[in-house]
Image 1: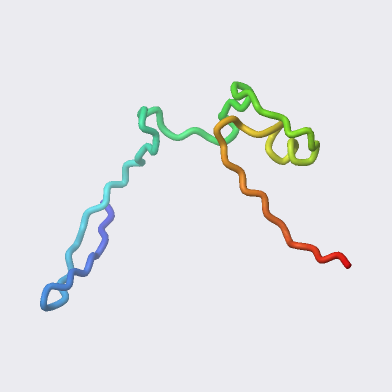
Image 2: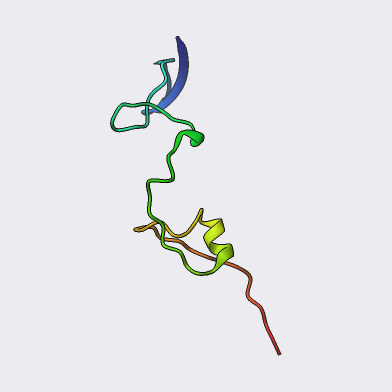
Length: 79
């Protein structure tokens, strides 16, 4: 088992040694575990097409309902 040092300051510095678990934890609330990006099914979501081909391509076929997208770029000055 791995250990980690943690230093606590209470009038003096004290080293506490913590034991770390080597078991992998799941980030999923359902407990199903981690899946790879290739396993994500993207066909189930109906996307809203913008009518701008390049933007629809970048967003994977359109905008996902309920999403918030911030589009940024450099400003241009025309005179």
